[in-house]
Structures are given as C-alpha cells and as structure tokens.
Length: 256
Image 1 (tube, one colour):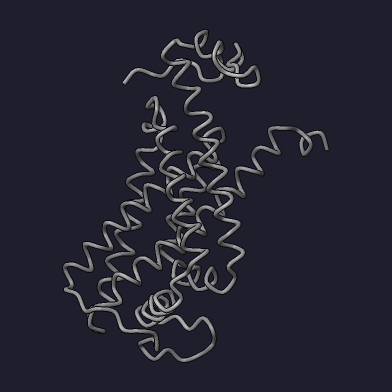
Image 2: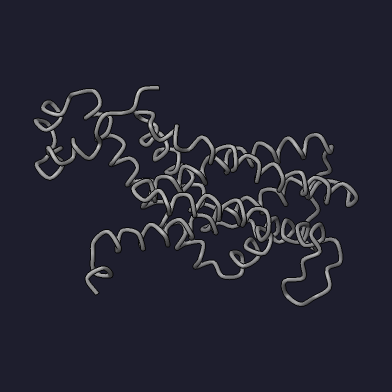
C-alpha cells in the first residue's frame, strides 16, 4: 500500500495516461491528414499514397525517437516544444469546435477504401458521398502527406517526451506505442475519434496541460542554465521562485 500511495507512483500513472491519450489523439489526426491529402487522387493511386504516408510516419517517429535523448539535453528545447504544442492545441481546438464534417467523412472513407477497414460493419464502396475534392498529382499528394507526417511526428515525440521526461521507461513505452498506433490502427482511431468527440476534447486537454508544463519547466531550466536565478527570483512572485532544490533538479547539462 505504501508503494501505491507514493508520490512517484502517482506521477508515473499520470505520465502513463498522458502519453497514451497523446498517442491516440495524434495518431488519429495524422490518419485524417493523410486521408485528406490522398482524397484528391485517382482511386488507383490512393492506396499507394496512403501506404507511403503510413510508412513515412513510422520512419519519422523512429528517427525522432532515436534523437529524443539528445534533443532533451538541449537548453531551451523544452520551452520551444511547449510553445509548438500550444499551437497544436489551438489547431486541435479549432478543428473540434468547427469540424469540416464532409472533409472528415471523405478522408475516413478514403482510408477505409485504401486499407480495407470495415469499422461500422458495412461494406466499403471505395468513396464517400461528401463533396469531391479537387484532383491533384500523385507527387503533390505525397509531398503534402510527407509534410504532415514530419510536423505531426515531431509534435507527437515532443509531447510524449514532455509528458514523461521524468520517467524514461514511460517515455520509451509512449514512443513505441506512437509507432505501433501509426503502423497498425491509425485509420481505426480516426474513425473512433470522429464518432466519440469527447475523446478528442480530453486529448486536447492533455496536450494543453503538457504544453503549459513544458513551458513552465523549460523557462526555469533556461534561467538555471544561464545563471540568472537571483535576478529571476527578484522579479517574479514568490511562488515562482527557483529554489536550491530546483537548481539541483535541473542540474548541469552534459557536454556535447
């Protein structure tokens, strides 16, 4: 019982659920973005483009995962990542408040057609009844997919690292889960998020919390690293003071 009531255990549980929801929401968003990018292609090219997109998303996440340990030692990256996630949270909020339902449904239909998924128990017909998007070249669609994958992969890895940086084992789990979800279940998650929108709002709240926490910790890390603790403590309210315990927590950064 003492173990389960320990603050460290509570912190681990909180970090675990944060990374799970982050991975779920971002895998769904990535899948919809890929579906929308491929929606303007001829049916014969859709499967190929979506396959390329999923492979690229997995590879990019693996690449960022391999760099995560080094990235987290860079002073200021935590703050920059938090600001980036704030923008991601704002974008998610706008999409949840004013969803482009027709585009969303068309993207999901394209994903189902390309992957053979039959989530609702109906036979997929290879198209949606929503408005037809403009046709585009295969090259343009793949480039759009790659750009979306690059942005969302970085967002995903930074969010997981920010939520669990104090617990390396949970960070590793979260990053592996992100890769697995993109490779196996992203289209299914996109459909579930569209059907049960409260999951998206909950995921948004988690991303927002992680972003604010990264900004809070990141700016204090910069102050400690630059040796401006005394000046900082003079101009901020008492509750924001950086204590000796905080200085010890941040500690010196390893040399590169």
